[in-house]
Amino acid sequence: MMLKNQCASMSTKSKKETKEDDEAANAHVDCVFSLYISPWFRFFIDYDPRLALEQVKCPALFLFGELDMQVPLEVNRTAIQDVLKQSGNNDYTLKTIPKANHMFQSANTGSPSEYVNLEKQFAPGFLELMSQWVLKRVDIVAQ
Image (cartoon, rainbow, N blue to C red):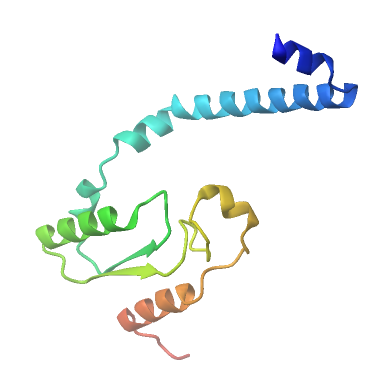
């Protein structure tokens, strides 16, 4: 009853905005639901990267964002390192980018909800770290 009274007392503009908000929320829920039941998502959930990591015999660089909420740092770093050691690959580097999120942007919390509000550039040191790692492993032929 209280909700009905609140709705009855709303302005026409507020009622319209509420309806639009509900429609947007329903569309978002439908979109998320369709993602969760998609073949890609099933593959993603079931995929075990250890099988692929066991096959890596070349130099490998693994970068982590300190604030990444999508690929949590410690559990993934440890798992990757364990698989590489067990498979005999000793030429790998695991580095953490301080205060970086999953997209390697400087972040406050690492939450995906803040992505849209962050500067569209990589965290300090990210590109340099990658470049230096690659340059140490390749011969550059001067032309």
